[in-house]
Image 1 (cartoon, helix red, strand yellow):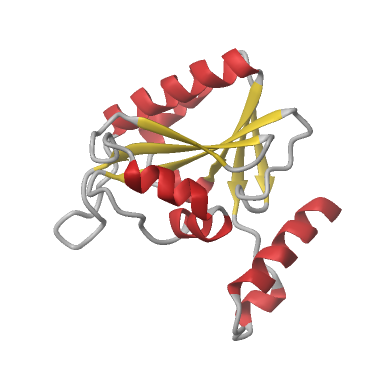
Image 2: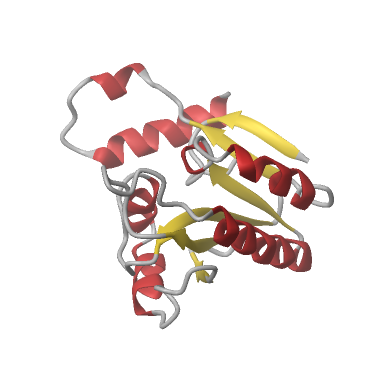
Length: 172
């Protein structure tokens, strides 16, 4: 079943024993911005595992990193290059489907829930059928960005905002 929730996918809200935080990575083999950068800052070991993996440039690969006892990170290599004027839609729907299927199989095996930021899916209406299919036997949480009043105020640390977002998610 698909659950749409407000919050941050790096602060999974499910009560399950195992959770997989899945995000899209580029085939250039580097950590991008936005959610990937947030994952890297929160779990630097996950970043190092991705960057040292030989398949980090292979489209369709899923590279797993352990973030904690209950959280796995699924780095889904399904984007060609980076978004730019010459590459406005870099995500490969075919490769994303492959990655989501592999992540589904893992989640079913370890009885985990899957957590994905909506920013990865906003441009991809074609992927809805795949999400519906893979969510038949497990729970997928899609996170809509939470806009806190403090996010509009200049802050010297992003950690403070991340802690506030996680706390906000736990309250609501």
